[in-house]
Image (cartoon, rainbow, N blue to C red; front, side, top):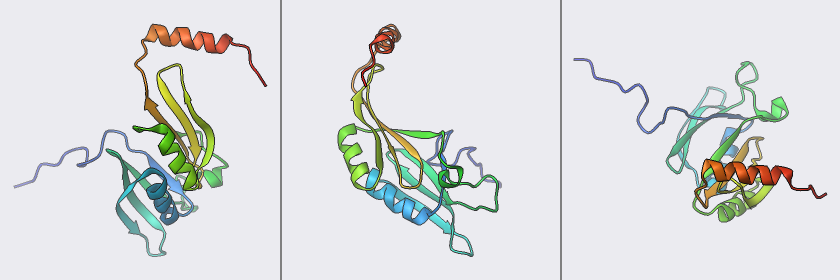
Length: 160
């Protein structure tokens, strides 16, 4: 008798980020220190590079591998000179989480700030080139109020 298989593996969601870095073993250690990540599994290739790893932050899994320069789809942000993609993490205390992440070696790009859409929000770059937005929802804002606040923000005089 054939066993029924779920089309999404247990513990995963419909969308799962897959990061490529230039030293997956070091990246896993950084994510543990900076974000409290839990390593779920790691598979090394014959040459010792991490071919696939999974870790979890909160209730979400993220996949990770070492850069494989021989493959066109396996380039790190360091090889590409940056990344247009960022990952958003909602946490209970953005200020504390941001401090932990920067003390662990993340580069602060935007310190925690209350935003017009209702989040207290910040951004860091990890030592491997990936961007992480870190946020805490501090208030529920209606679409009308959000539009009003955005308009006010965009029309405010800029200070240098």
